[in-house]
Image 1 (cartoon, rainbow, N blue to C red):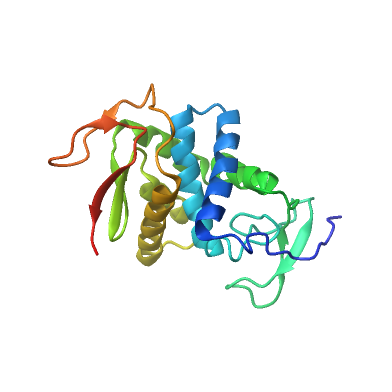
Image 2 (spheres, helix red, strand yellow):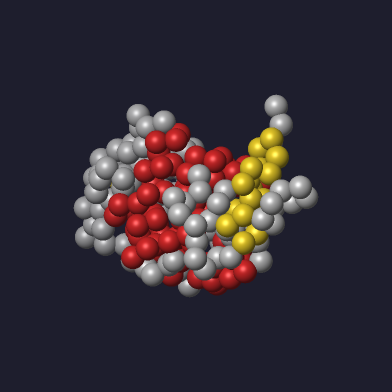
Length: 218
């Protein structure tokens, strides 16, 4: 039987930037351990953090280190916290994880679900394959070129059932992904495998590990 624990808001007290960097760092380490090339791991981590940011309000509604506030179904044998989400009529059971500095355990489980889950694994494979066709724009008023197609990945996982698909939801994710890209910046090295990209007229080709601002408006 799962242990019921008190719901704790684990993102409380962190600025948006601090929360993104913390969860991105934890995700990056998990993805490295799974064998991804460092630059690819960096951007897959940013892709996932943007999803978690949308679902937790930039960590303000992150409970029990559960990235995305994952429901505790019958197969879950870990700790449980009771929350009332936006689509819950009453309080419902959600997964809870150890309260760690960077929520490492919760991050690892959220990644496992997003990558290994039967419904979502095909979207992950397409995300990795998209590195051969970039760059891709993320952001709204301020846009960045990134080397993998995060927005298409989010569309794919919504259609697979993670969230109901809506164009408004996809547009919101695109904007959030740009903000996340701006916070985490480029990896602190140049990728040896992802090649080079051209980021638009008048902009020189750069190493794919680099983050490039495409457009900014006041």
